[in-house]
Length: 295
Ligand code: GLU
Image 1: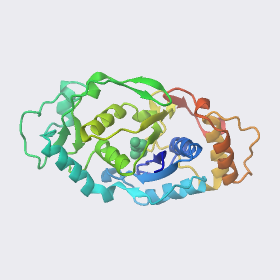
Image 2 (image 1 turned 90 degrees about the horizontal axis):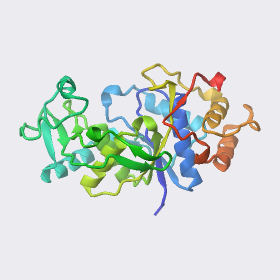
Image 3 (image 1 turned 60 degrees about the vertical axis):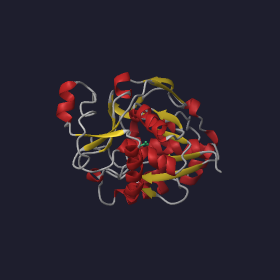
């Protein structure tokens, strides 16, 4: 059995931008340096956010930037049966309940959900489904950032695993997929760091072992604002792959003076596998970025 299985799990809500390229690159390098497998999973569980064709664009961007994944690409939309099966199992164990609270109702009571519907015995049909969460942990050890503290009220919030609109929630899908794909290392942006505790709790309730987590700094345009499709981050261009890679390698801590833009992508990637180390990467949750030409 392969001991290291990593993955990159983009949501196909648009093409890769510079922030997601860096995320892919760090997860790729981390896996390849461990002689591990590197999988790509298209996280299209939230079909309301899917942009037609974005999955293919993302895959072509990864390939153009020298990041070839192993095996088949898994799509979350092909996994609804597995998600439902897990939900049914949790229901049999009486670990879930239906919740009719709207976002506004939750907000009016505080920052996080406070268990309002726990004892209401609402019908499952037409309501959100929440997992009873008695988690008392509010910290975990991250491979990169060390001890991470998370707001205890968030950690013990009953976790939404199926939305009112019938779509399975990200936290459930990501855990079930990582289990199914035997992922050993989750390397992803620190913007998702808090969700780790809730995901670890889902592993516990399912009786499964959680993977190791490595959170890299999110690439931000200003403090608290990550470069994202929502703020119209420019898609990375395949015909600029070497330039993009050199810039990305600088950001993740490498000294790139010996590299130049005319070098082929495969050579750059090989060089990065040989030279990068997680120790070079800033141990922070954010890196500020104002454009490729300013790095
Ligand atoms: N699909 C998530 C995203 O694109 C990543 C989830 C994960 O890596 O756990 O932000």
